[in-house]
Length: 467
Ligand code: FAD
Ligand code: NAD
Image (cartoon, rainbow, N blue to C red; front, side):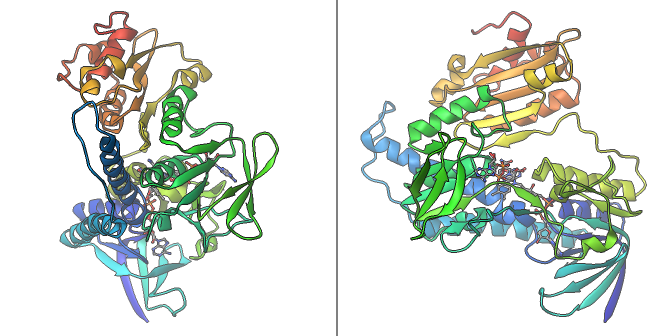
């Protein structure tokens, strides 16, 4: 068997693994990256990017429909039609450009990329097979082993994937739009993709086990999303448990919030009840690493319990977000090169690309109270923002949370159209230790949604100008 040696051996070419590889190579570390499927991982191929592409396409189609009955803007559209195969090709084109770009960057930096599935032999050695059934084609030994195998979707025990029951991966490449879609899980994927299918014309019913949608976010933030779901005609069953498909296989049996068993007709069922770290099927158990629940346990430098074995990204648990995986990957490469680094972000932004969007960075008023911080908080509504009016997007608000004693900002939350783009300013202010006065005293361009950020800070100081 061919045996190769390297300094840094990375398993997984998602945002965690490929960023670690690029940074390591920039720092002069001989790096080999093993990827069994496509470079870019879940994020570029079947996650962040394709879902945002489909959200944009669905929004554009929905907008055209909205104009069919005429509109206050004076725009009238005679008819709107979607060629879903063309939409999927367009989305695939973006994915191909980005994954091709990752390949080119790795090549340019001199990273050795091996296409194949890695199986762990020991803490410094992996065998790579070209597919899961074939024997090993190459053995690679590395001084450092970085595990970045990501996560896998969770299925429902009584309703395995297959046939009508699909995961987000299939939902992102539809052949056609089903008439009736049942979505199990009212979290990130269920709502982002549930909205896409609704806007593309499906009757969508969301079944959520908890008593509200997006239970990770506070209720004030999710309320405008609930209202929008209702307006758009999505049905939502809260506090409900899926029992399985009916005997004919064309409806989902659900124990609803009132304890009644109901059947919801379904041409397709999208199961989106969370993801779990990808820890099985590649020999990880041989290393007997410390675990934290289902995730690999790592310290604040992403070291596992074995010397020179590192882990990043979804494999290390929540929050399972691409930007966290990338930041961890960059840090591990720098530590291996000899730099002193720790993973201690002041906050990691979370964005839900629903309609309207939600963004959360740092602590909410409730989070702050829970840890005994005496805080002030203030909202600024988009209804009072000129730019929001020009965009017909006056639903929602920006909220700031700051310490009462020194006005240091500890959290930002926003809900509204396009607020995902405010996450950058929110993260900057928290990471840089800004106070309310810093944001209030910064000139914000007019007319922008960002003025609501400054106004929220002004309002917390007791002198908002435009509300
Ligand atoms: P992954 O991206 O999962 O990459 C792991 C890679 O390892 C894969 O390419 C896999 O093939 C490879 N691999 C696994 N085992 C082996 C092996 N044994 N040998 C070789 N290769 C192997 N996050 C956001 O921040 N924003 C979003 O908007 C967002 N949207 C999402 C939408 C959807 C539908 C989904 C499913 C996820 C979304 N996420 C989003 C989450 C995001 O995709 C993940 O957090 C991110 O991809 C994790 O990166 P990673 O590098 O840890 O793992
Ligand atoms: P999620 O954790 O966001 O939501 C899962 C939802 O399913 C929860 O509301 C949960 O209460 C519900 N649920 C669990 N079991 C259930 C059951 N048996 N019946 C009904 N409801 C049930 O998970 P997801 O939407 O599958 O997304 C997976 C992960 O992917 C996310 O946690 C996130 O890390 C990542 N993601 C991020 C984004 C983004 O950043 N915009 C988008 C999509 C996915």
